[in-house]
Every structure is written in structure tokens, then in C-alpha cells.
Length: 170
Image (tube, rainbow, N blue to C red; front, side, top):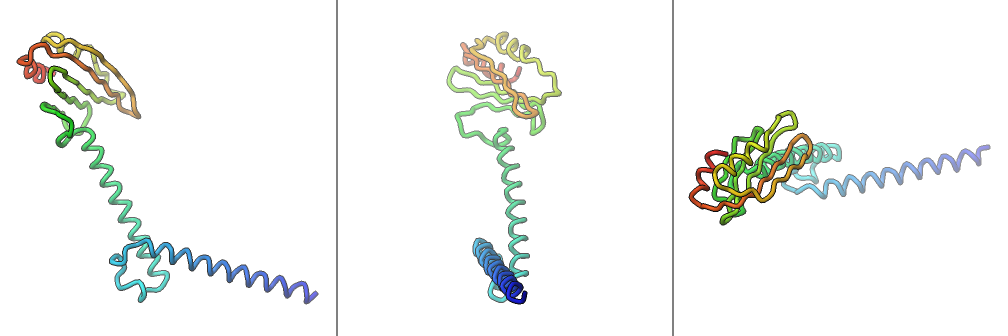
């Protein structure tokens, strides 16, 4: 009987030893991913638990930074700051819905309207305004993404002087 229990004890010790070695290598890999300037004091002077605590703090800071950058990306994609593509006139009603954006490129006018699902938006009113002001509507599309409805109207402006009045009316 003793011979059976002795190998079991050695197996458990070996398994535990291997587990500790594996955990130590994982902790080393994790702490090596964090920039050295993040550790206060230096990494060599900290216990493994303190290193893991500082790694967790660093990860939380990164998560907060990612959320902040995603928020800025959304604001920029809605056009709250300048647009990169030849936008001459852009009218934004703020970061709240609905959002109206006008883009002019030569004699082509693109009207982008973003509204919420709960907001009953009348697309035909925008098309009527464009036609009343002398623009020829080429196409109109609508798509729903999440809780937002995107309307895009492409129009041809016959008289460039009418463009400013169209921008004011829409």
C-alpha cells in the first residue's frame, strides 16, 4: 500500500511544481508587455502580487483610453469636426439626432440625414425642398444600423447660385 501512495504523492508534487512554473512564466510574460515606466518603483523591487496589481491598473487605464478614443471616433464620424472629403458646406444639428449634413462636390449635392428609429422622419419633405429649389434628385437610399436610420439623397444642382439657398432650406 505504501508503494501506491508514494507515487501519487510524487505525482501531485510534480504537477503542483509544473503548475507554479507555468504560472510564473505567464506572470513574467504579462509583466513584460507593460512598458517599464509604468512600474513604480522598478519592476525588480516589486513582489509578484504588486506587479500584477500594477498590470491590472495599466489595463484599466488602457480600457478607459480605448473608450475615450471610440467616443472621439464616433463624434468625428458624425462630422462634428472638419471632414476630409471636399466638404464645402456641412450643417450639423449637434451630436443629438437627427443629424443633417450637406456635401457639395461640383454640381453634385449629397444630403445625409441620420435619425433615430423612434423619430418619424419624412424623407419626402427633404426631396420636395431640393426639387423646389431647383435640384434634380438622382437617388435616395435608406439604411438602418442599430437604432439609427441613415438617409442619403444625391442630387444634381443645375444652378450653382441655388446651392446656398438649398443649404439654408434643408
